[in-house]
Length: 287
Ligand code: DGL
Image 1: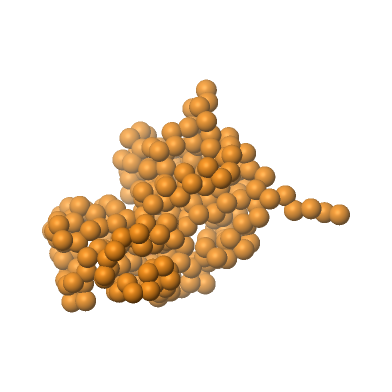
Image 2: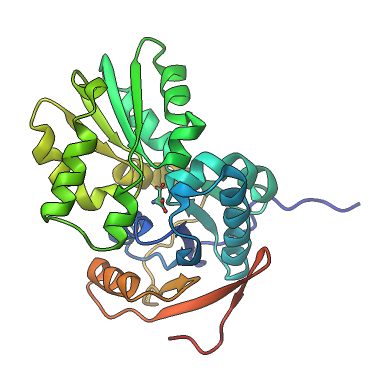
């Protein structure tokens, strides 16, 4: 009788991480820092960016194709380093691939972290795709029914960040316009519910001042990964082998290459995979 092998992964395999573009690099960089022996395969779906403007169905299909690609590349676990993909596809990916490997999202770790505080009202900023699912309101109120949650779709922020508009008059004007949303006036905390937003966290904090506590998912996800490694013997312990970092994109962009180099402080060789229907095919002659 055929048996299903649960979690056949081994510690020496890489961690797969994906996002629509550079946002997930904020998560990947922290994972690389906290787990220095781990190899990482990162995928930025730059051909489909921004995910925030796509439908749940489309994002789910992309996430499925990327997960299969990362499994084919030998990943032992996958971190969905994108809120839009976590909101749209986490449940589907767990159902379809969860028996092969562990899949982590970025939403539940952040929700669990924020729910430990005794805030009365929090604000959430995210892409249109994430806000349309209402997932933060639902998950936060499940843990803290009395918590008031107000979410705002801030669609311009991710493309602005991808374009490199940071710490300048344009980013400040855009942030100010969004955060002056009247319903944010009495929030005690703001959740940066898009993995691109840590790149503008300082500008957001400057606008909000000390009375509003700002959260992003980076630390929450790394902690979740630590907890995961305590349950499963998948942590790569000290090894003579130097960890390998691979960065794949579905469409080569100089912005991505520059950002990846900035995050990892070394020159990065981008590798390219093409979408062929619902599958990703690795290009042999990479950039
Ligand atoms: N970084 C992504 C997120 O967390 C998506 C940004 C985008 O492509 O719209 O939602």
